[in-house]
Amino acid sequence: MPLSNSILMFRRQFCKLPFGVISKEELLIEGLQPELMPKHVAIIPDGNRRWAKERGLSPEKGHEAGKKVLGDLCRYCSKWGVKVLSAYAFSTENWSRPKAEVTFLMTSYFEGLIHDFMRDIARCTYSNVCRYGMKMSVIGDKSNLPNSLKEAINHAEETTKDNTGLHFVAALNYGGRYDIIQATKKIAAKVKDGVIQLEDINDKLIDTELETKYLEYPNPDLLIRTSGELRISNYMLWQLAYSEFCFVDKFFPELDEADFVAALRSFQRRQRRYGGHKI
Ligand SMILES: CC(C)=CCC/C(C)=C/CC/C(C)=C/COP(=O)(O)OP(=O)(O)O
Image (cartoon, rainbow, N blue to C red; front, top):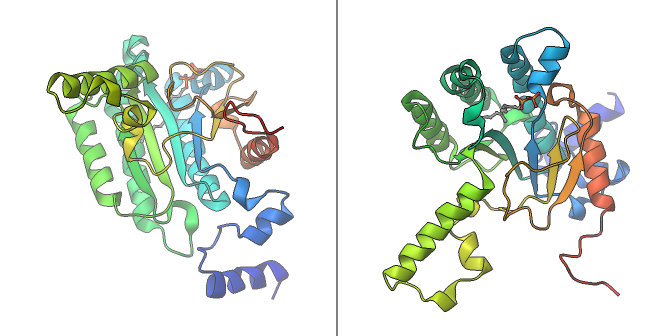
């Protein structure tokens, strides 16, 4: 039996790791420290339309190409031991895009994506790690999403809520400013009703009212943005306070595992001081 197969067999029997998940020993061989792996990776998947335009294709074809890469990214995260993957799917500002594109995203693309994810999660077994045990959530203002999309989201969240694998979080009709405003309103209402005092407002309290409050790891450790743009475009403004950023000069449909691992390596070389000093 080839060595790689024996390692897989050993892992399955003794380490209780699904096939395809990297063990601590293998991480070390790859030059990565298990204890320094990011728990929450955020992605701003930019460049679908430009990728399509360069090839003379429609924006829809670009988004379709991005769909496959998003699935791959979930697999990479599961494989390399990331716990939460959040993706900026549609910002509160994206409604100003051409009507045809917004209609495509809202009435076909996002729902189709959720459907594909659910199908793959259901098919996935312990021996096929891609979506094994994956949990799916959507954050953002769902109130003005089409009803059938809302139903698909509710179904996906309800069906996967007890899964313990990778937590995939799609930020849909989301904005960092929106998130801070909605949290502020909830806190202000509590002060007004006398449930809390003004003095009770602090970082921790705000954390408990943000849309990310249900995540095991609410603050991204690593933010990856594709397409060479060097900005955060109103993504989790509060939660990104001490995140490490990695900008990849490729369109999202071109992102591959080597880029992802390069981002992990770059992340592990950073010194995270959270505003403090080591010396
Ligand atoms: C389950 C669920 C809802 C998943 C979300 C999937 C997801 C992250 C989609 C992102 C789509 C998108 C608008 C990409 C940005 O490319 P662009 O159009 O900004 O490309 P450009 O920069 O070339 O204009």
